[in-house]
Length: 409
Image (tube, rainbow, N blue to C red; front, top):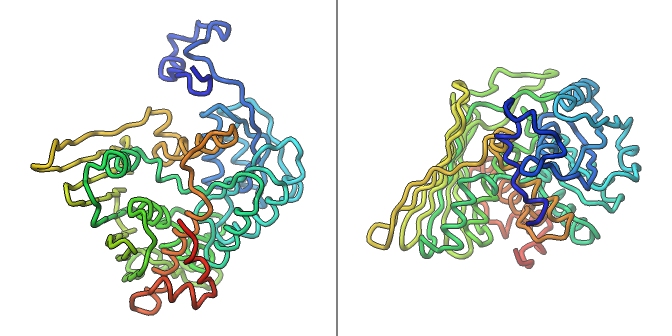
């Protein structure tokens, strides 16, 4: 058995009744020795999550952190001390972090609008890089980052980890591997959720810094839809606005301007039509993907009762009627993984990253896939602005990026 994938039986390992078993007798409880060293650039909510997940995964250790906000550094160090005895280096600058020869890979989890600038410096290290989503807030920056990735001698993975959510892993298995639905014709996705949480500087309340809600959050869903459609988007039409959330919020005299609801229609080159629904003034979290083909329908759903603090529930339903066997399944990850971040998806995104470090082939989000999620999102934001449909070809041509249309997905 490959050591990295040896089951640890964490549920037994952590029980008080098993603490009499010393480390010299650990086999099922054995944790591999970390062989990689990470530096985390930006230790807000997502940065701390990467520190926690990397430690849980156990194949790499966090050696240093950098963030211009001292309180974020203090909190990150405090929380990390509860899960690891490793001593963290607190880098005084991004430059100092990039000059640490002991670092094997970098995680960029700074605010959206800083990704391009930070990446521009980190690529000079020539080391593997994980860039949080959205990779950029504009098509221009995303395209430049793809150029960097294409000429980069090392790994660059984008943090579109929702492709690792348990219900979507199963959905892709049914639709693409088993071909249960036959030829896919329509895709429908939705997210119903409470508002964005507070951030340092509240940058996520302003489109100037976040890229807009359809870029900041919904790039996840556009990535999923693109993957399910297996085609390039051709036309995007969006309708939405700011109805309730942050309508009374101001910072430094500037009013919040992000959308809290939207409907987006996407037409693909292969004839598939998709739609996405967003609502950000709901009391609980629920997201759903419905895929319909010429043989059946699939419904992948996740429900999270935030206020009741119940574990999230993921289900996948396949309806085949007279075409075959229909089924309804509850899909799960182990509790320790599910609770580590984004219902387990960050764990498997990081597993894909470290697998790449070790020379394995994975389906981690590439820079080009990240760019196309941004293209759909930015086209949707443009559609909101002009009040009409946006041709992807015309949109990219007007921006001076028509060359992107000639490349294969």
